[in-house]
Amino acid sequence: MLATYLIGLREGLEATLVVSILVAFLVKSQRKDRLPQVWLGVGAAVALSVLFGWLLSYTQTTLLRDYDDRELFEAVTSIAAVVFVTWMIFWMRRAARGIAGDLRSRLHDALAVGSFAVLIMAFLAVVREGLETSMIFYAAVQGADVNGGPLYALLGGIATAIGIGYLLFATAVRINLTVFFTWTGALLILVAAGIFKYGVHDLQESGVLPGIGTIAYHAAGVLDPSTWYAALLSGMFNITAEPTVLEVAAWVAYAVPVLVLFLWRPRRAAAPAAAPATEAGATAAPEAATTGPALAAHSEPQPQSAPAPAPQQ
Figure 1 (cartoon, rainbow, N blue to C red):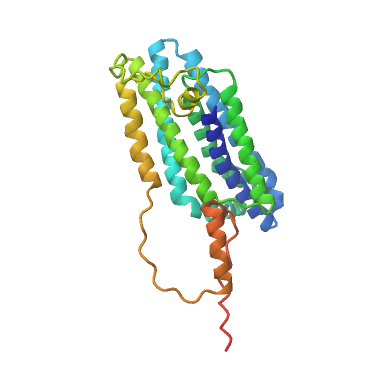
Figure 2 (figure 1 turned 120 degrees about the vertical axis):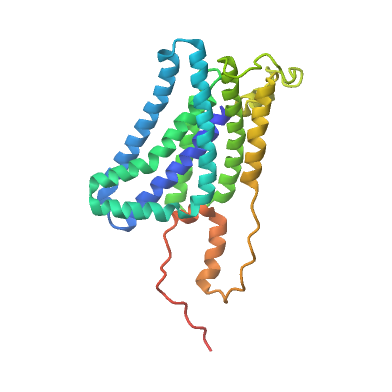
C-alpha cells in the first residue's frame, strides 16, 4: 500500500500545483468569472482518469478470457507504466522551472478565445497526470491482494497532496519541493523497477519469455512472507524471496542505471563574476533555494522593466 500511497502523493501534488497555478493566474488577472470553467475541466480530467482505470481493470477481468492473454495484457500495461513514470520523472526535473510560465501563457491565450477554450486548457493540463496515475496504479497492484487497501492508500496519497497544495497556495507554509521531488522520484524509480519485474514475470507466464522455472535464489529464510519487512519490500519494490533469473536481471537493469542518471548532477561551469547584487536579488535567491523549482515556478514572475537603483554616493 505504501507504493500506491507514494504514487497518489507524487502525481496528486503535481496535479495540485498545476491547478493552483491556473487558479492563481485567474485571481491575479481579475478573471474569477472563468474559475468555473477551470474546475469543470479539472473534474472532466479526473472523471476520464477514473474511467481509464476502470477500463483497464474491465479489459483484464471481463474481456480477456484466456489466461495467457490476461498475462500478456498485464505485461504490456506494466511496461507501459514504467515508460510513463520514467518519462514523467525526468521531464519534471527538466521542465519544472518553466511550467508556471507555460501554463500562464496557454491560459492567457485560452482566455482570449473563450470559456470553452479555458475548460479544454484546464482539462489537458490535468488529464495527463490523471491517466498516468491510473496506469501506474493499475500496474503497481498487479500480484497484490485486491482488498481495497491499495485504492485507499492511493486516495490517501492524493488527499495528502491536496492538503500540501492548499497549504502552499493559501498560507505562508513553504517546503523544499526540490528535496521532495528528488526523494519521491528516487522512490518511484524503485517502485517502477518492481513494476518492470511484474511485467517480465507476466511475459514469462504468458510464454513470451522463457525461464519461468529458473529461480535466481531462495531467500525465504531471510524474506519470510509473514514478516512486516518482507511484506514491505514485496509490496513497495516487488523484492520477493524466490524470483526468476530474468526478473532479477530486469529489476537491476532498470533500477541501477535509471537511479544513477536521476541522481547524477553534472557540474556546471563557474559563472563569471557577478555585479553587486541589488537588495531584491539578494533576497530572491535564498527564497528560490528554499522553495525549490516547482514552487518557484508557482510564484508570480517578477517585473523586468524597473531598473536597479543607482548606488548612493
